[in-house]
Length: 314
Image (cartoon, rainbow, N blue to C red; front, side):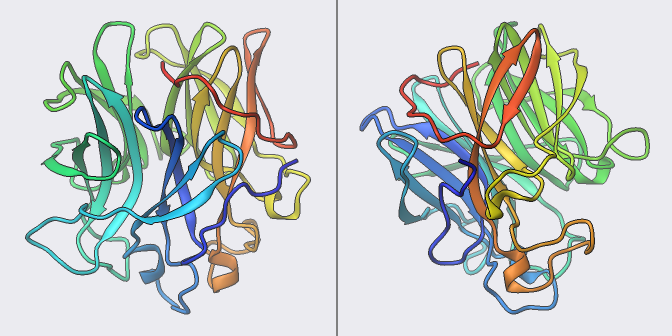
């Protein structure tokens, strides 16, 4: 059913998952923001200073914690730093990670954030390549896919642009060209974050976290988008899944898909603007089934995870 598939055993703050198959071992690896949820801190320091955790599964159903990813910090700024929302893909002969990164562990949100590019041959050893030049100096939540026009496209959230989604394009996953605004945020539309793009049922889908469920858009070319509505706003059956689904990653199989997402099971999201205690800050990871029915993307929370077999791709 909709019970959690994974809980971080160290910091109790698994969030923003991304799932990819390890081409060498055949296993599924899940990387995630590891928020310091069990800190008793009255400010915002708990959401910063986060490492990237990872877990491994043979089938995408049962997950085992493996530790925290090393080697992701700026070599000129050792110590405690902030790592969020890794996007990891296989492309052009290597793994690529696009990581949201903030120096240090600030106690407020008025700080610069950047998306940093890393590569790896094996998902274990990562080499820092560059800091991407994007629309502002406060950007997070990269998503990358190879699109029908032959270009790799990277979508991201611009926090200074009203929590909107923007895009850049590339032929080689290293050099990026500005493309422009994709989805407006406030004051013109719903603010949002965590874009995720995938192909299912003959359409390209863009899903974003609107903090009251997932906003859904579809496209034929990955450039022009039409809004469908919101999914995963209704509560799941399990007590740990009765909150809004947040910041997910979709793995597509043969005609169906699964979305890996997180919830704050101890936080009454409608009564409090932010989680304040360790119990409210705690997060857990879940999976929902996705399918396209008569051209509409449908999500089902109260399903058991299905074994993953095929390589996910756009």
